[in-house]
Length: 303
Image 1 (cartoon, helix red, strand yellow):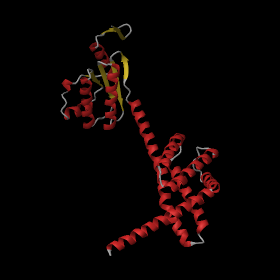
Image 2: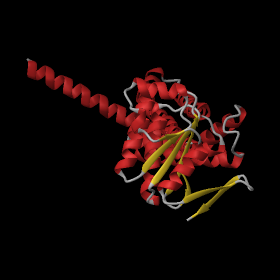
Image 3: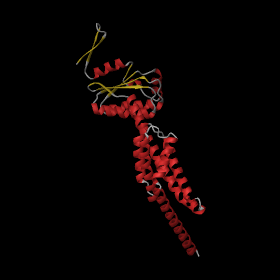
């Protein structure tokens, strides 16, 4: 009995998939035969709803054509690699032009609606077949829509991460002021992520410039929690392992207290009150003689 029941279920499943496959092929044929009309209707609705406003009507129509054709191919083959690749490529091209996530979601839902209305118009007389046609269409259509939308969101997040990284690098520049001497001015809020990025930048700079002395100026840092303060200490130690001496300048009483609270012996950390004094100390360590000229009220360096 169990074997017969299992055989019956298998037959029913095979019949279901055969019917679904037949309906899906009929669906694809319908969408291909009506390609021009449906594509034009979709492009018209995109413009009417003021989506993709950063693009011209010609560009919208060209992209609508490509998306439509990739959409139909994905429905037919039930494979989504080509559509995923196109979605990423499209996102790379249109995100820099200011296209927003809601616009992509909007046009994907519009296409789904345009195609669904076309199917209903074609099959509504036969209610049973119309329902079966939508049963075959909707799962595939939903996956296609998710593929396009997800591709856009992932690309947008990647671009945002790159922009944030670029901003962080600009906000913590490693500057070479003379041979073997680097300065790292820190300004603003230092969170753990930025502290890690700061260390990576500094160590790369030490290696690339063969630096012997580094001045880290934290005058522009108002506050520093224990985690970041500990990271600063680790940065000093990591720099020492690469052969560079670190001089910390601009240490505020609050940050000094934080360092003491986490157990740092400030007597073992090379600290100078101001940036100018830190540079002069660095130059002494590098073997330069600093001569103060009273007439010029400036500093003259003799190698």
